[in-house]
Each structure stands twice: as structure tokens, then as C-alpha cells.
Length: 286
Image (cartoon, one colour):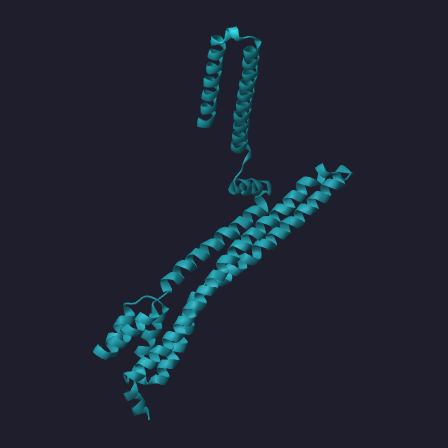
């Protein structure tokens, strides 16, 4: 807008200056009049060009304000057009799936532990206060690795064989806790596109019913049924894609924690061997 005002100002100064020169040189003949007329025509063309540009900008702005739609607006509109039946069920799959995913993300993030620091703290506690001090460190640390350490330390007086068995057994328990709810997420991933395909079949049946009732094949007769059929499929696939991405993230997170658990368990056995924890029990058994 500032550029437009500046152009108007320049055009006004040019017109005012040319008019003054023409009045001052009135006696010089027809050549000056011709020059003034040509410059006036040029100024008029300039003003018309500016007005057209401003009108074009305003028209483009109106088009952007009224014709442009965001992705969420389009999705909402298409969701409503798809009908409340199957679209509502697909939406429930998305809501329940995301709820389980959020719960698992929070749980797994809380389950993540700095295993190197934990092993070092347990080793320092064993060196300074013995088994009970190491168990206290594990009690005050959050996560499955600390729980496994506690179970292993609790059976250290029975020998290293019992420690290894306790670590392996309780490691399986912790894996089960981490994978809790993953099967339901997989169910919603499979269920969403299946519901979408079912909506597609029902929509095609409706389209053929409309053709049979109308007695003729025309775009206006079958368009609504086919559109509903395609919309249910699209939204079912969108839900499945969203849930699948988070599902794979959770699987990668679980694998990472399991690897840390295995490495930490080996480190715990090494620490117990270095500090001769459980050696007395092993000697008594022998």
C-alpha cells in the first residue's frame, strides 16, 4: 500500500510540474501543447495501471481469505461428508490408539535409566556398605534396570547361579510390563483400515442401489455413494498410518531399554564377581 501511495505522489508531482511549465511557456506554440498532451496521456495510463494493480491485489486477497482452506478444515469437512457411522468408529480407533500410545510413551520414558551411572553407584555402594547399601541404591532408583538389580542383589547370598536366574526371570517380567497394551495398539492399526474398507463396500452397494432405483447410470446418481465409499477408506488408512508410526517408535524404544537391561545385567554379574558377593554361599554349597 505504501508503494501505491508513493506512485500516486510521484504522478501528482509530475502532473503539477508539467502543468506549470505549460502555463509558463504558453507563447511557444503548438509543440509545447502537444508535449503536455502526451505527458497527460502517459500520466493517465500510469494511474490506470496503478488502479488495476491495486484491484488485482485486493481480488487476490479476497480469494485467499475466502477460497483458501487449511488441511484441518478440509479433513473436518470430508469427515462430516463421510457420515457418522463408520467415520465415528474409525475416529474412536484413533482416539483409543493414541491414548494407549501416550500412556506407553510416558511409561517407557520413565523406565529409561542411565545404566552406566547406576552400575557405578551400585559398585560404589558394594565397596563401601555391602549388599544392603547396594540394594538401597536400587530401591531409590526408578526403572526396570534398578528393579532387576535389586532382585539379583537380593539373592546374592545364594550364589551367582541364583543371581543369574533371578536376573533372567525378572527381566522377562519387566519386558512384559513394557509391552503391556501393545497388542491393543496393533488391533486398532489393523481395525481402522478394515472399517474403512467395509465403509467402501457399503458405499458401493448404496451407489448400485441408487442406480437400480433411478433406472439409469449417471454421475449425479452414483457420485454421493462412491464419494462416501472412498472417504471411509481414506480416513481408515490415515488412522492406520498415524498409529503405525507411533507403534514402531514404541517398539524401537522397548528394544533400546531391553538392550540396556541385558548389558546392565552382565555388568551386575561382573561387579558381584569383583567384590566376591555370593562367594561364601557358593563355597558352602560346594
